[in-house]
Image 1 (cartoon, rainbow, N blue to C red):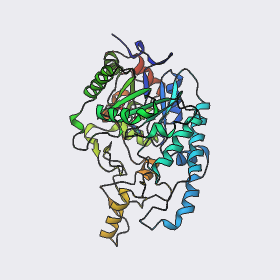
Image 2 (image 1 turned 90 degrees about the vertical axis):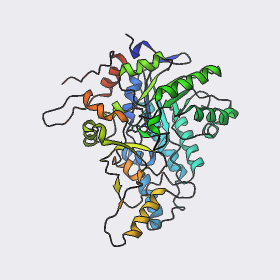
Image 3 (image 1 turned 180 degrees about the vertical axis):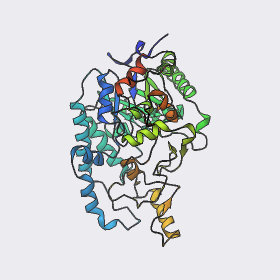
Image 4 (image 1 turned 45 degrees about the vertical axis):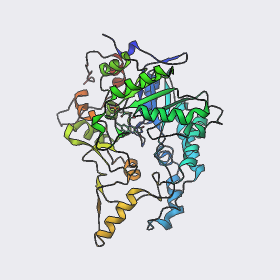
Length: 416
Ligand SMILES: Cc1cc2nc3c(=O)[nH]c(=O)nc-3n(C[C@H](O)[C@H](O)[C@H](O)COP(=O)(O)O)c2cc1C
């Protein structure tokens, strides 16, 4: 009976434990979590989502306050075209978070950054370029371009001195998306170093339709991509993600040719995870019927979350003057329209509710949008329940080693 530890993820001569902890914004996959994965010989991810905000919380900077002061005059205006990011602030916060994380790295593994193209930040190309560029300058080991098309992203950092040595990977949810990426990116003469194939059971945003995600399955998509790469004689590590809950699930994919697996949900209940503990208890307690895929994210991508997420139905004022990470290149976000519609319909209401869209920036920042993977309802089987009904948090090391060494679909419980 094979274990995950019988396999290795190879990048050139470098060999790693083939476990990658996926990026979870906003600071849910913390530096502490990513560093544990690296210390144990695998790969961890920090996230580049909302780094000015994350930097304020972690390193006592005041990027959000400064931005709010600058744009305070616009708070009652539904047109947010004026609300721009200071590229210097994005650069500084990215450099700070990445370099501080990399300075703390120990062990033989690697730390990557998950980069969300969906964060259009009222100037998609300019802001993305700064985020990518500074992550490389800050010494990150690799960049994973999160689902979205990212067709021009490699070109944005082509001139960076580390362009050919940093690991660059992409997340795709279909063979078609991969083919499109390879075609558009051919000009840079730089293939991705790895391909994460994310199936429909993952947490966060999904690369499938709201009504048809359940028709797809990770194994089929992964096998199509393996076949395509073989046909094209392309030797690129393939890393499936989404619903890989036990070491044995992982071994199944590794035996079929995957180079590693990307996992996240199991680590949402680790001590190193950024979610507050009361939220982690909600994840533990959830049953299958408490989880849904909905369209409340203003990005237009379906998102999986707990049905009791405080973000659902919340009618807070759009927080673009402080945040504004989802404003498109014209300063527009679907939540602003939904909010204004409800305000117009209920002119005398003190508090309004908005159900179709959510102010994702504010709610992710405050851990009020409880995005999660499909198998969150199995987390209760991974820990011990105390007499008061709460569950014991796990260490990232415990979960990592359970993936690495377990067999027969067993899940090791923590010491009481
Ligand atoms: C709480 C949570 C937040 C996530 N946030 C992101 C994100 O910001 N960017 C991203 O590319 N993937 C995100 N994901 C997806 C994971 O990185 C990963 O690919 C996926 O969840 C793996 O499947 P699993 O959770 O079933 O193990 C998130 C997943 C979870 C559970």
